[in-house]
Structure formats: structure tokens, C-alpha cells
Image (cartoon, rainbow, N blue to C red; front, top):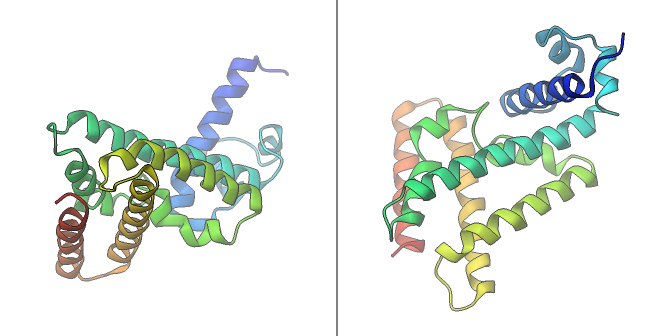
Length: 192
């Protein structure tokens, strides 16, 4: 039985949404059979939507990156004028974001996985980073666009590393201190 194109696209998006969360939570250990079973779909049906797990990983990474960009843009819209960068830093390095591994920044959750992925997945990350930095870099200090982009790259790579380490720490007090100290450091360094 053939399904309408809209239903096929809805199913594809459902697979991507679920995979984006599962990859962030579990890394590359996500099994296609388990993923499809969770969605009440067949393992064989996966190949009607994706050529490979690598394609799924790349596309779900893109979806996850779009989700975190949306969170950051929402924070920017709500920020007081002049406090936009501070708001981004506080939102990204919040306890809430740290606790939301499966819904949070895929860079903090998957940077190691992406680094071991195919060139096509890494190129997708490159595209997203360039696009994201072009939106955020105007908020950063610097005399030229290039300096502001460099500062944005340092800020986001540092914050994602901080978030990854904070998630790895078992001691809640240490995690909170790490996040608070990093927020203070990045605000003083980039939003002074």
C-alpha cells in the first residue's frame, strides 16, 4: 500500500526528530532497529527515508542544530536591549540547558562523534557553524567582522566544551560552580 507524499514526509520528520534526541542522548550508539521500533515503524521502512545511518545522523544533527539556534534566537528576542550577548551566555550555560542533554546543544553532546563522522556530516557542521556565527558575531566585540567572527567561534566552542564537561561531572555543586564560573568568565571576557 502506497502512502501519500505528505504522510511519507511526516514519517521522515518524526524519524529525524526522534533520532536528533536519541543521538544527543546516546551518541553513535543509537541502533536503527531500536529507533524504528520506538516509533512503531519497521526496520526495513527506514530505507524508504534514508540511505544509511550516516545520512540519518547528518540530517538529525542539522535538525538538532536548528533547534538550538531557535533557542538562542528566542533568547535574543526576549533580551533587554544591550544585554543580548549576556542573555545568550546565561541561556546556553544555564542549569536547565545542561540538564537537557537530549534536547540541548548537539555540539556539546556530539562534537566527538561528529569529528569521527564522514566528511559530509562534518561539512554540514561547518555550514551550520558559519551560518550561526554570522548571526551571533555582530554581538561580540572586535574592530572588524573577522575579529567578531573569531570571538564568536572562541565563545561558542568554549561554551560547548564547558557544557560537555559540566554534564560529565557527577557532583551537582561542582557542576553548578563550573557553569556559574564560566558564565561570569565569558560575560567579563566578551560582554564587558
